[in-house]
Image (cartoon, rainbow over all chains, first blue to last red; front, side, top):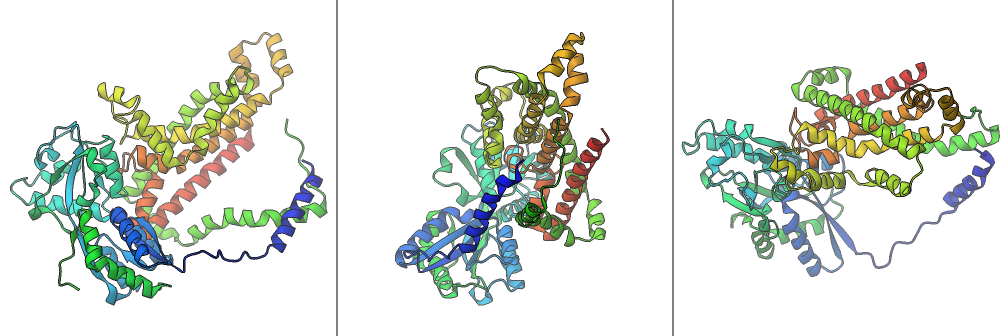
Length: 273
Length: 265
């Protein structure tokens, strides 16, 4: 290696680093950006709410970070910059509240969700009833217990095992059929759509119009269905607290709730707010 | 043969240090920052939990299997690329490099499209009653797909660097092709083969994206250490930190071990 050859390059690098002037901010940048941390299951509905909110509030840009609720809470804990937090369960919101990550007065439930069983359209395991999920050899994909959907799935199994229609062995038989515990409920949908597994447990909202093309659905009775509550709150250290509150109000408004229900969510009980 | 290494002249030496330092810091500080957040006692406590033991065992045996497969099938391929001259060699080399530049998630989806239940080959396998996704076999395939190119690349460079005269004289001495390979070619390319093997093993041990998509996540079956760290991060930061520290120590131990083995030869 010829060291002399490196010299001019190094000098140029140093000079350019030393002389760099700060670029002026782009003139047409939006006046304000609101960063919304939202659970993965809110991807479609919140994207539409964001578009509508931006249309009604010129100059405001909504940026989303969709991920598992606990991953979002962990990011907030570690100082991620955000304005709004929308969780898929009360547990993560409560954890955020206990750690002073959100403004307590702003916590409101804005939607509810229920579990359904999905299977590929060609139904390779010939699933007709929920009882079939305990049949030996059925390959079941679920969300990991660390994500809300997985936690609700376990609650559903506990309730089913206590129900005479399914029998006390149901939970054990079902879990013996589980082939994978996905880190994200959307992965369960993808793998069932691809036909990799015979059945999966997801939120009703995950069966979007697009997903429904590849899927069949089996509903889970209310008696054994843990209905998930989705709370929203303004982040304690929000740099855009006023706009964040405005976004939350929009989600809770009639217009926001209408969009929510278009995506198979159950709107939050009226009179709560 | 490697050129003799000497320090450059003093005036360029300080400039090199100055320029190398920021990158060196970025590469070295984060692993230590992670280790600093864990104590040896918690490390030992978690080391005994079944979930951690399962993940470590699965990671070690699948990555070792990957290495074995890559060496057995990758060495002939590397030899072909290193010493052969044939039409389309450049294209073949680019195709082999492909997995290196693919994002791991893309690799995982590509593997599903190939070996999934409705995949190109997987549909045919499923007809024969064989299903690969969600099994340790899928973990090994994912690791092999993303990690093999490192070995093939490094080893082929090693084979290419051997001078024609050395091999010719070995042939003149009447050595059989296999003996020539074992006694002349392989020792001369040993350094590259070892480096390639180490790279492949480390890459296999750290594989995440392709594994979680193609093999899924099930403790003891497909949940390797990187998956356990990711899932752990979502449940309990402390557990994730501990698992991550264990992964760091194991992988660093492997690297040191390989260097030591290399130094002895």
